Figure (spheres, rainbow, N blue to C red):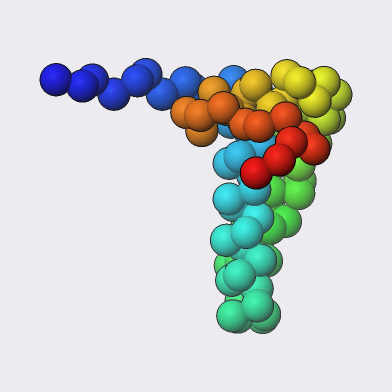
Length: 89
C-alpha cells in the first residue's frame, strides 16, 4: 500500500502572503463585479488598515530568499523536483 507523502506546511511568512493574495484576488474580483459595493470597500479598507503592513513585511522576507532556496521550497511544496533554469525540456 502506498502512503501519501507528508505535505509540508507553509511557514508563517508564506502563510500570511498566501492568505493575503487569496483575499485580494477575491476582493478584486468582487470590485470588478460590483464596483460600488460598500461591503467590499470596507473589507479592502480593513485589510489595508490592519493587515497590509505585516503582509508586506512577510513579502520582503520571502523576496530576500536566495533563488536556490526558493526553488527548493517550491519543489518541496509541489512534491516534485524542478529542473535547473536554462535546462532542456
